[in-house]
Length: 320
Image (cartoon, rainbow, N blue to C red; front, side, top):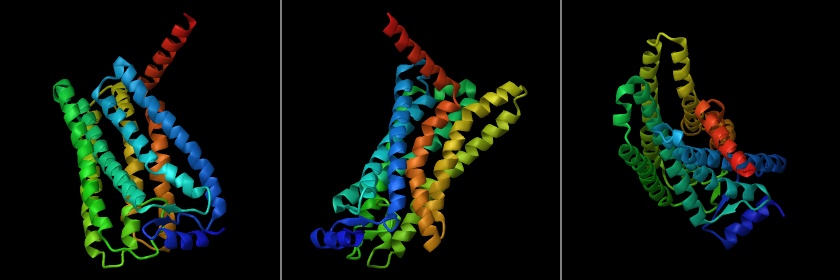
């Protein structure tokens, strides 16, 4: 039973399905990836669920910063769950298929959540800007009603953009082989197998990248430029250290997420970068969501303190 046999049988029995090639030409690598990604997925589930629960259960973390961090953790849970189970199923054997409807749903959900994360990270940078550059007005500006409104805008903007992209992408007539040279149904991979000229879609994708990657990243950099200028005016070394500690975690997450997204979507395409792009796809879909909770817990005294308090309460209640 070979991958070629599976492809032929799939084309005959399910012509509207897709075949996710991934690293199907390297079965030994696939076995390694199956094991590694399974471990990472468990860490994603545990790490992000822990941050959501800690932020909800500890009253000291009922602040705008942890409200947005909980949104980020929930987003990462949804994002990885929309991709990794299908990825693990395809890695376990020669069957690399995904149904047409499954591909549409995966592209829509993953693209929507990815776009949402770009906007969310931008709002988190704005939150840090207000907290550090306008501390006296922070409580007035970042009030609970605004937080809910921002959350609604963040999630709606991502999925509205994804809806437009998905409709335009799947209106394209596709080649009969339906083989996607990727681990998941991503827009560039689907556009690549279109049987018509895709200049319009490529231009439209460039506009989307500018709106949801370039502009958000620019706003984040502007926010941190203002934060850096304010921080340098702080005379106490302890005060500057506290600011860098507060913002450091977010900056690392921004660098990991936007760095890999830019590398996947903006780099020039050739045989080498296509293979490299698969590993980059694995990085931002698997590795980054795993690292996010670790970055925020290892570098954040508030989260570590909340964990100790909650664990101490549980131990105390168990003893009594």
